[in-house]
Length: 437
Image 1 (cartoon, rainbow, N blue to C red):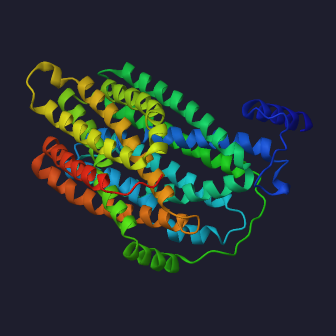
Image 2: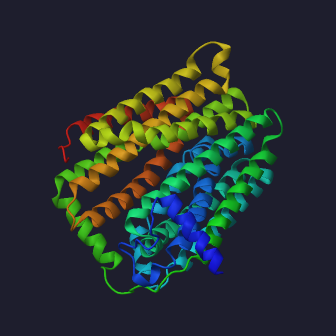
Image 3: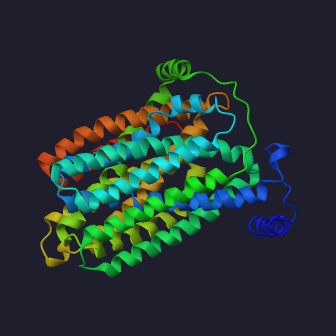
């Protein structure tokens, strides 16, 4: 056991560049000795979570699943709203519940286990789901998965804050993100090898691997050594909500920002429709999905450097530029359907547009996250973020449902033109926001 502790400390020091594994800023002294071992457990847990997230993506994998089982188009429009809103809506209530637990890792474990069970259910639906009833079951399972995701997300941040030192958390997330990105690209490459082989079995295997990822996440979370924490402090959810609504009424800049953020939802909502168009125009072979996964992974890896330094200069300008990028990508996606030529019946042009929109969507996320953090003060920042997230969850579910029904009537290509119009509105709205940097 002593040799194992020494090897864990040496590995931790090598990964973090520390010469002393007892650098323990911002965590209890009692947690300091456990930090090297906990670092590795957090790393593996984050790897499992990130891999599972990518392999069950509501923007890419699940639209492909809906297309394979023949679900209606309006159901595809609900995938992203349910996935995102389920994690955002209960934040205020979940945070209050978690504060009552001296050890929060078991909430994380429960969330990971529930997500694993949901992914396994999606794998079974890939094999036996059919038409509208199958699509409805996919949405129901996704709702459960999303709520469990919100549970895990808040608990993960809380446990990390208690077990990993302040200046080591970014390093931890960086390593897990890099490894998960590489594994995701490998998974996409493997899918490309399936080519025209039966897609349902391969997709079920993919979702089964996602279930294993969340099982790994839960197992590693259970093995983390967590010291008991305080259970008092903070406002209850209702008081926080009332205060947040008063801020929304009195702070016109915050209200204006949330209007811009709502219109910028078009970047997230358009992604599954481009993936669906790629499938319907090129066929349901898993090779096409693999290409989309690979291009999406590469796009996500390069997106943050593209937008990061720009957001430090002006997050308002980043939102404006990302809005214009969304307009261009949506119009290109819609235009491909209406263009003549055999090349528009291949998945590659849709994959390129999808990858470009992934880059643009990262700009939307980075711009609005930076803006809301910079516009708020230290006293009200947490409330601003929680309220904005909850409001976005409500609006995403509402507009996603309406636009999904519109897509059933107009078709995916025409709906992309609607998203382009919303993104153009986002540009003009964000353009008039005040600078906060």
